[in-house]
Image (tube, rainbow over all chains, first blue to last red; front, side, top):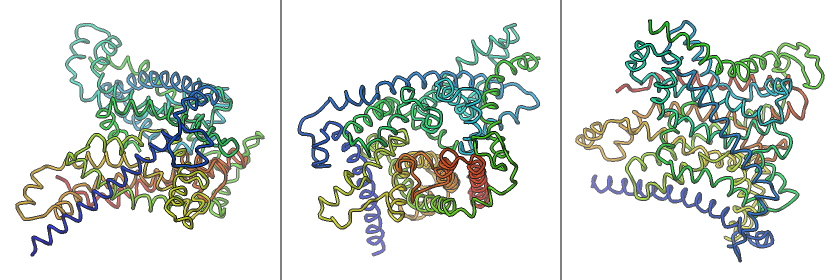
Length: 283
Length: 292
């Protein structure tokens, strides 16, 4: 009797689990599929029926989104900003992390926590002071300003991860190199940095995804449309729907924005899920 | 000897990062506290010192109070929903289910998408005219259920919570998964020997041992809700609206309302909320953590 009851309980637990999982995954998949096939419809078809499949697969929506709606332009802006910002973050963070992990000096703890503090402070706190400051430095409405903010913003997390990484590396190699008369400068670049490669890769994947997706500062800093990043451009396109009603072209744009990340995710699934664990804790 | 050599690196290697960090974080963050005590409009150069006036104004401002309430709403409803959901998914994923990679994709991919993508997607789903939700209801003959989901507070807040959960779920599942992997299998074996069924094992072994993860997640979710901005800003097209949160109201006050002093005060309140919740939840839950 007790066994039967336990079995019923286990079974219903399983049923509920499977139902919830299926429901969630199915609605997610349907929403995604809806965006993708709608991006091939004409607007007339779309307004006639939200659900219906496209009568013919209209690639012209993509051409429109890419060229007329300037998603193509935003794509290149975002790509080069993300690459430069990621490279900058990686370089500066690796340098700083090495010092913070290996060199003993009085203010070490203080500097380390000064960086970490930024991970817990909402950007909303310093939004206006930083905006005013950027205006003084003539860095508003400029890609350089955005890149600098992205580099500075990426430092705390990257330094946090890389300092941890450098601490796990054995000290013998750099000691041997220094004993042999190599300069500390050379030891860092030639020996320690290559050893940190796995950590650097994790950090760069993260930094790249974050800058690729970044919206907040591009909203605050960028005024002219030709400078927009993908996130900023997509937002503008979405807001224009109230007057323009080119929904299917918007969806084509949405797919263009999503695709690179989906592809990155499929290619690097394991590394990303591992990195997310670290990333999540940063808050 | 070695340390003396290594110290030569402090300036060239640490300097650049520290400089950028100071210019783009430390200085503006400190300035925010200063601005919050002034009546600065952002246009004219005068910054008149007004003490705590901006803070008093905030707590007497209906819109600000409403945005605090909305933040509370997102914190509570969101967590009540995302907590069981993410734990369930993590437990299922830890058992290597069929279609594991597909499941992971559906759960984790939204986490990687830009918040704007999430906002446009869910904004379109909830759109009253062309939205997937209203269209589906009409298709099912539930015409009377259709409504402007984002137009009324009673439906806008849950609708936005759904979008927040969709985007946040992956992170929470990952953290639970990491926590689950740390629990030694021997714990389950001995529980099984004692005759515990799957449910009892979950309740008496898994959940207590995941307590520190739960603690992190509560803090993360509350902090996330307090700081909420982009999703709501994009979905509601930046207009003052029923789903206003501190972030969107602050943005509006600073850029449209031309009171940087007031907006900075709200930023300071936001900062202290985040700080308080992190410390409070840490303290409340620390004692319960089980060392193993």
